[in-house]
Length: 289
Image (cartoon, rainbow, N blue to C red; front, side, top):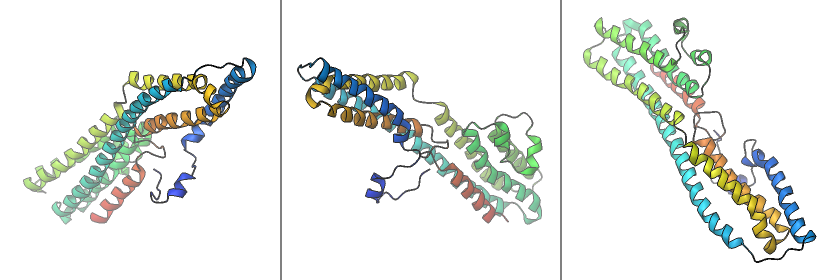
């Protein structure tokens, strides 16, 4: 995730970083400039065409497409913000669970306490790579060393880890190492880990409906490809710049929406899950010693 100063207006206006939509669209924009210039030459210099302006049609269509893009962007941002709330909840539940580990498990059970703390610290890293569709080997590499040989052919590593934590708690309760109240309190936090995982998977595996996504792209394509024909009679060769700028604005909004609708990846505008996972691991280590 890109960290920036929102109050630095001029710095942001003239900033172009490596993930800027301009760099992704530059070849398409160049092709569009050539296409528009050819149309201008044919209409102005070759056939000397003169007809009534049709910009009113594109103005009306522009209003319609702007509504579609606003809905598209808002929907994508809602998914991004929901993902951020779920990871914020993961930070909180990890802290609460580690505090209970430190308070409820007797000092005599230091080895069991440290193992449970290690599993708690590892969960965020496991969930992060799981949501990024990393291989099972990569996801399992986040597990504590004492668990890596037990994974086997397990595909859902977050469930595997939560299951191991569940069994560890249950074993302590059955051996009366923790009270029933402590067990139930810790179980409630442990269940929250799985709830958060399920909510993040819901965001990950439920993209914007295919038909809707394709329709917006086709609408933008048709709007831009017909724009030179409607504007050349009014603006002449300035139509090239107007067309490119309009395409850049519309396509950039669509690209941004595509990027943030899956907020768990490695794109510059995705959630800072790496930093959040490191924060959780550090917090757990500070609490449970």
